[in-house]
Image (cartoon, rainbow, N blue to C red; front, side, top):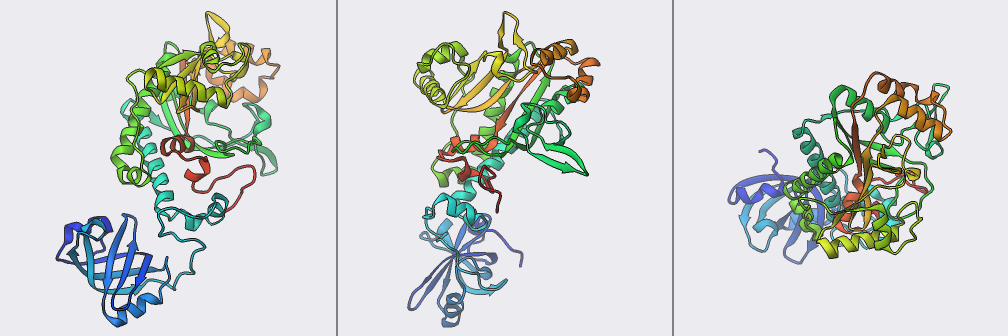
Length: 428
């Protein structure tokens, strides 16, 4: 008999079936016992009335792995409207060590540090795993939307030979006796691949050795990157980003609907045109000083509230950041060289995406590096691509964990990260 998942049980009412999974919860009564079995699809109720079966279940703590064969019968009170009767429960391993917290309760009672210390167990809780299912669906939507738009997926190195892109904030390592570093982003490589495919995207880890200890920062996170050539300016990039976000949220609704329901959330609408405000206007909305070089978290929240109030949008672009706060490869605004053809996208008052137009002329790169007092030598392989001709191009990067945290309303990005790495945590 082929194993089925709990989600398929309703299609087999009246038939013999075989399930396998974890003992999610046991209820041991005088004349009957109930086993709630958890598998990748959800949960199923198993009813045991024979004394031998009830005794066997009593010896299997929660999280023990079992196989159950029995007959599926309709019962409106059971999960999915169907339960198993006349079952045979067979352990598939040793009885599990009881977990340090109850996974069958609607919410985990353990503090977040305790959950993270016991991630292998905490992630089994339906609410924790639901967030990861949403992340997987969003990633699939990112890939699918860009694939349909003519992008090619690439894989770039995560170990690099130069501490480039704000060099102090990198993790150093030994590469066969030579210094090397974990890549802060695929930025330089994805730009070069525009010269190959014109449109590229990548999903992968990035590493930031920044001593942040906040609810929104990780030292390693998943970056959803895209870069496209033959653009007019950063507004073309913003249009692609808008469509990408819409595609991600459609995928979340289609592929992770039960996970969203478990968390009581729904994907927000992405406006046909996301509202955009210039950087200076954003400062005024936030009540910040006109000479501020960047938006602080409180400023982002104020701009997000403005977008919701004035436009009914959970998303808002802030454009034209000062060049002093943008990387050297950022293209300046031709009309205002002190400001950039770049943007941040705020999602519910938190920066989610950074992007913009890049320089594409070799001479401009040499001038930009010289203006910042940086030698061109460490960038030789990167600059070679521009010496041999590159089109006007730009791109963006979405932080996946931050996106999911804002989507589900998590107070801390670690709540939606399987095994977070931060200033203090390197295990499990």
